[in-house]
Length: 148
Length: 117
Image 1 (cartoon, one colour):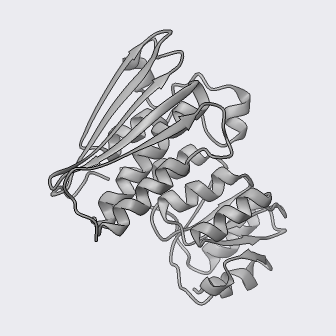
Image 2 (cartoon, helix red, strand yellow):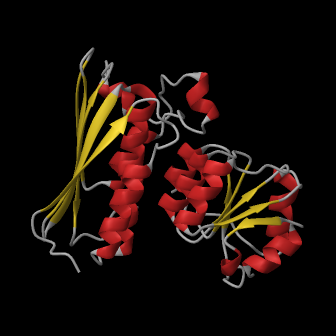
């Protein structure tokens, strides 16, 4: 059992690397599971981080995702270097996508990613600068029952 | 239904994860779109898909699916199979098309994921 205090892990994500895509989120899931976190929360964190990770792989050049944990919250932050999002409000709508055919062939790009992060998280902040990149701040409360 | 009965019903080949065959399951979901699987998939389901890439295995792992059944005779590539072995997931491949595979499961009282609210 690892201490739940001040746990922090950072994962590098490479854009266009479809072979490794998702491996950081699988790692996060394993870490949380080994810590004995409620499986319902682990699943929500894993889904949200996987969606965010896939966004970096699909749209950005690279990104850095960090898992932080304290006795009250699990936090996933992600900073990517990429094209950014022009209109976050529109990007958050279900079904809105700018995916290429290649991305769709991978089974993604249905415009469900960002709404699904929001659905699984207790708090989700998204900031973006066009031409620079996007940052995600996704928070899960350990004492919550969740909303999915 | 056990996963072994599922394999027999769909005349499926076991690609990896044979040791899971005696486990039971009650629900299944079918999609080629991993975005939908992530949004609507449930823990413990059998996932039927025609998308045979490594992402189908990672998505199944993330949602904690019991098994993945590839339809239309598809099989994941070596990377996908290695990933499934690492993640300890049962992979099956059936020659049946999606419609028939789902119909057979439904006729044996395997229900789908919960409807949208």
